[in-house]
Image (cartoon, rainbow, N blue to C red; front, side):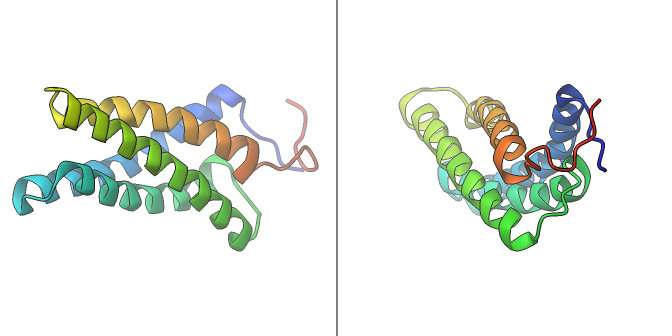
Length: 137
């Protein structure tokens, strides 16, 4: 029987793991924009992919301690991440193209929204065990 952390504990671990993925995301974003003059919206989307790969590996093993086959978990994770990337791209587009707000400030806001989306959907769908092997807390 697997015993899971409380939802709050799991969210905090998810956010901590996400900080590592976010570091990959932001590093990619800043390098592409500052050193290669890539459009911030495109650079953010590419950075999002880098962060998503890091997040899948760490969340699969640590946050949700999944024993699902990677074919199932990764497929679901990619669907959630793709929708998250769309949310991120939409917020970046609106914020960068329609306001004078610095792209990094817009990205921080987008990251917060996508963090909530990803945790909720990954917990309830991607890595859900549907109660079959979770011990009561």
